[in-house]
Image (tube, rainbow, N blue to C red; front, side, top):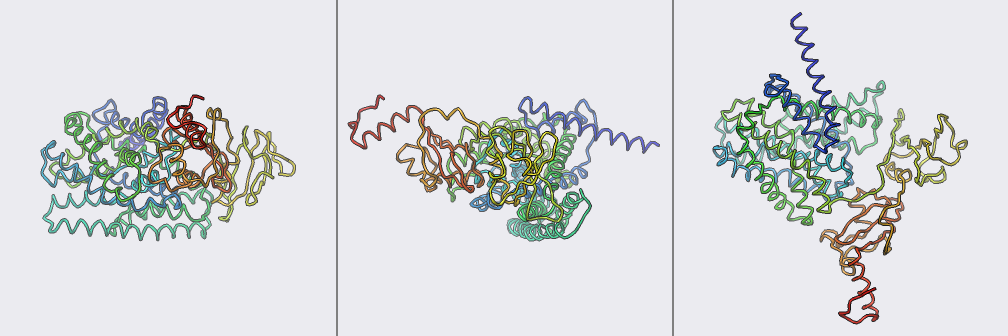
Length: 592
């Protein structure tokens, strides 16, 4: 009976922590706090040093749960990534995730040794533990505040986050082995080890992705079991790859990438299920990591840990980013934002459990310093990420509200998808005739009644329209059901241009501040690049004192846009035109 009581008590505590962590997200949203920081604080408060008083020091269980959670989260990240959005971003991202990780770890080691009183290998271990980023959390923070990162910048950050874990994990394990055994030629072992991890992970990840696609399309399962099977295979793939000395993290990300870019059955239920499961994984992982922490030990290491965190954020990460991206055409502002987007998260604390499991003499130092660095990063980056993105103009302004779309799986069907949209005021979709030829209105729900398209006639505000469309073209359908709202910038002078005008030409005539990497792009290409090939009416890009706004989109490409200038810049442009046609002498200011 005693064991039954203990089991129920454990279930009670675990369930209560999950509920508290979930409800605390409301408080985080209210005050703008980073949601992952809240989960971490809940764990610390529930631990032995907090009001909860729960004594938890099982690093092995934390390592196992963290591995499974990260596998699911990375698989979900790959599932939502589109191959088209990765063009031009893969090589720089992989450079950051390999060379950049080694450089960051080495730079951090330079200050970790003197600050913490560690030897060369121990200092390198500190650097390896905090070298990897949790950029998926960065994207979550930016998107939650309504920002849209440029396609290439967002892709580099996301790909880096999925592919830098293998290098960080391998470096950490290798350094732990060097500290516990006498390994010859560690430099050579490091190079071959990283290559092996990446190669095995890549091969098994792609193969596993195609195996999942084949199973989903050929095996009939009862409703609701497809997502469970996919999640189980993702964790299985992670474990098998790790046992074969490959990177399980890279394998599950690539498997998700394959599945997300192939036609598969039940994709709507899979993505919906993973939405919930990844949230649960984040909550459980951060709460467990928080339980391991002793607040008084964090305070003891606070000063040297703050020094490591400051150097990492202000020097180590930016230096690695600028050096790795030097061969590529990224603007200064884009490099600065990618540098600032180096948020440290669960992976760093997760890696810090490895020295604890190996019983290294300085294991407690690594864990507490890693936790302090993550805490600083969550607070600093979490509260400033959106502001920095706006200040550096790396976001695409989209004034239109987010589209509400409901996806419905069709049994045995992968070529077509049934999607439902609520019809709201201002939407261009006013009836079946408004839909493109590749989409068919199948049903209309109006005032609780189900109507055929013929009986419903034109769609009205308050209706729900059910449309059959190819999965790859659903994003184009979204624009027909997105309200076209007037914006405050509709007043004043606007210069219309076709989408094929080059930004370099506009810069030379109107004085736009255009990054070098975009000078050769047309207006249409600039919006396609920044909006992941899904531009919409009302989207804007700011170039210094000017804003270019989309006015017309045809077949997913911007055909017309308008250029708006600030009052002073507008006056100077008018003066320039008048001088060009001899209507105003050189050097005379325009007063009109």
